[in-house]
Amino acid sequence: EELKTALRALQEKLKLLKKCKLNWSQTAEHIKIQTHHTTRHIKDEFEKLHQFLRDEEAARLAVLKEEEEQKNQMMKEKIEKLSRDISSLSDTIRAIEEEMRAEDVSFLQNYKATVKRAQCTLQHPEELSGALIHVAKHLDNLKFRVWVKMQHIVQYTPVTLDPNTAHPKLFVSNDLTSVRLSDEEQSLPDNPERFNEYMSILGSKGLTSGTHCWDVEVGDCSRWFVGVMTESAQRKGEIYSRNGIWCLEYYD
Image (cartoon, rainbow, N blue to C red; front, side, top):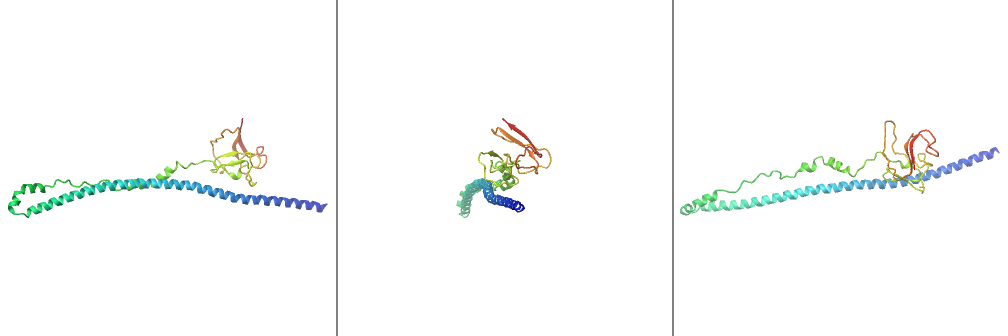
């Protein structure tokens, strides 16, 4: 009888070890799944940021290019006008020099016209104020201004959920900010952090002191709990009859 008792104990131990091995194998497989999904989500989020930066870079380069074209066109028009003035003035100088080399009688006959021609009516070229690229406008606090603009696509969520604590019937959104209840139960490891009876989930960050408040959107849910619990509080089985949990309950 003593040997049978010892054998039963060994068999129970073996059953426990096999169950533990199965759970750990499921955990190892779930780690792979988590890594795959998390990697994909990280890449998706960074792609959004990269696309925003690419669009922002293209927009700012387009503004710079537009300014360059405008100022190049302005300089082209001014240079062309100046070239015409130079050509006209050069022709005038050559004509005056030819008349000055003419015979005295011919020179005296055209003297008044020559003197009048020598009076230059061309205006002095204006100073090119504001002709250069406004570099400061394009580069002033560039990274900061892009960062400020990025706030429109980046949202800060004060509370994110910890999927490792979620009951198997709770499906957590990719951004970890919302959860929905399903009749379907997911195949998840029964890790110590996870609730296995009550449809509950914890936030990803704990609190140590202070006063805290949250805005929680519950949609058309007819029954819900919102509260806090100690980190050491039991999460398996019946939890609301135990110490370490404080919550508000609503039911319709």
